[in-house]
Length: 91
Image 1: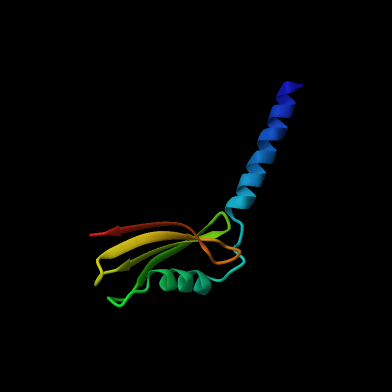
Image 2: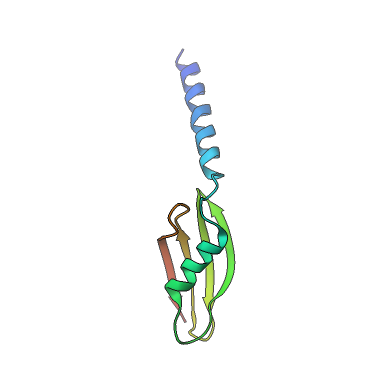
């Protein structure tokens, strides 16, 4: 009996995680990119987008600004296009 409950619970959790991992964001890629550009825009240099990934219903945008010697990665909320997490490094 415990074995059956464990198996059912394991399958339910696996299905939920798989569904959530592949959830589609409500905003477009362009909105995510614009949020990153607006956040990191400066008078020095231009921001170049290196990669955009979808994960857990959010966008993860990797960018760099060579003239300003900055690069980073931002997690953009897939619902309201706000930055949830950010990581920036300067040379």
